[in-house]
Image 1 (tube, rainbow, N blue to C red):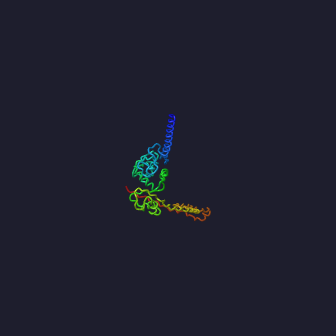
Image 2: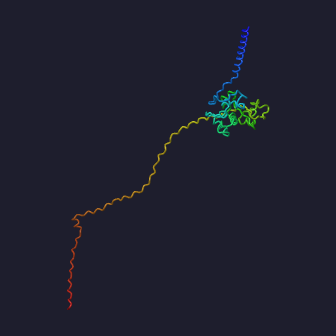
Image 3: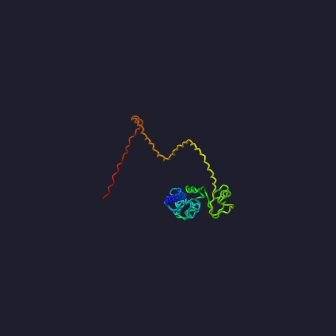
Length: 281
């Protein structure tokens, strides 16, 4: 009998232990967090503090949907992170994107801005680029398309004109009736409004190719005629004048005949002067 009691007690203890093991194992398996989805290049930080939330109310210190969840996925919820990979802050802003959407108003880089300031810039990116700006982490939470975050003073008409919504404010209201409610003028600040796809831009007509003009045959250019250069008149060359040749001398005989006889000179007798009278002494 004592042995039977001991055996029964041992069997009861073993059964209780087995039951406890069966109950504990599924509980632990169900409580295991899902593996983190890979973010953009350099966005995953092994060993970083914080866990990735599963959806609204389960993300980040503030639980703000959807930004705390996106930050959990992008940077493990570290809003001041700078790993040197070219992306900064909790939402892993690329520096040119931070500058293009007005981030420099708050800080030089996203990691130097506050959480609220980073979210403010992200809202502008969301309205322009949509959730494709965070391609991996947005898919994790089922986020898609472009959205506008309602701010103070917004109206459906102004939002529709800003984003060129086809159909105007009525189309925008119909797309968001569930979140706006029955009063389209009663917009609540912070509400996420889905933006219908904007109409595609008109295609730019392709210019027709202009036929190349056939080059005309080259016209020969006229040969330039050299302009005569005026030259100084040449000095007159003296024409040599021939000296008159001497008349031919007639033959001696003819000369003798033709020459008149030259009379001999007549001798004139000279008178001897009389001697002068000698004066008396």
